[in-house]
Image (cartoon, rainbow, N blue to C red; front, side, top):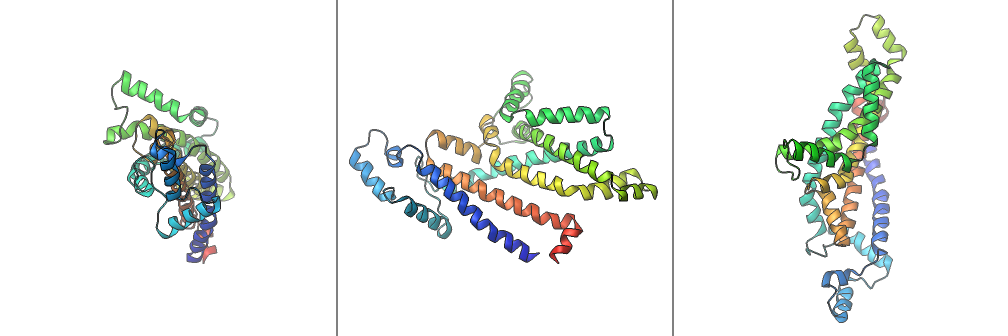
Length: 309
């Protein structure tokens, strides 16, 4: 097990390097002079040239990329913001708790709704509940998050006045953002749970358990669900990673002070180091989420655990 984890951690190195190279290349060739952005449009040309030399912007591309990787690995320095002159990592870490909280609440809503609905749909295939649940799930998958968020603000904040429309300070502020990203994810989990459960409940050992007189709830929960969990865990892990990096629009709509909103504001102000550092941070976080999901397989499925031994 320890060798597997170590091997997966070593595999993250080329992935992170590749992501860093792609992001750095995109930012390098993006139009705009960072020195001119920092000093302003009215700055003298001599001051812009001097600042470019101080920042090393006149160096070749590979030299700049190597310096960026070295500073990131050795000094945990992924640059400084052009607008605030604060370290990028510090800006990200002050915003990341809000993003993590939003993603955790969203995935909690998705699991609470998605797994029970998928199980009931599979056990009552082609029933009225199954048909309605699949139609609603299809709508949830197809509906854009930003439109759903705006509709929730319109209904629950403007018309009904039950919940605040922006902010992330109190539990009441967290309800609408969590529901916005959680319901679309719940639709995906519902469909995956249903298909995985349908495949499992047709197996011979499920018919044997029923023939031995097992209660239906035990057959479903103890035998079927545990064997259907592998693809469900995969979807939950991937969706949690997507929520950590994909809640950009949701954070912007509800004014959540998270990493996604920080990146949107940085794009508007052309603060390239913050955009670059934010994308890199999300990529690293997503990679570690995938690693945790792979490790969870061993605790869910004894067959996988025996392979590690």
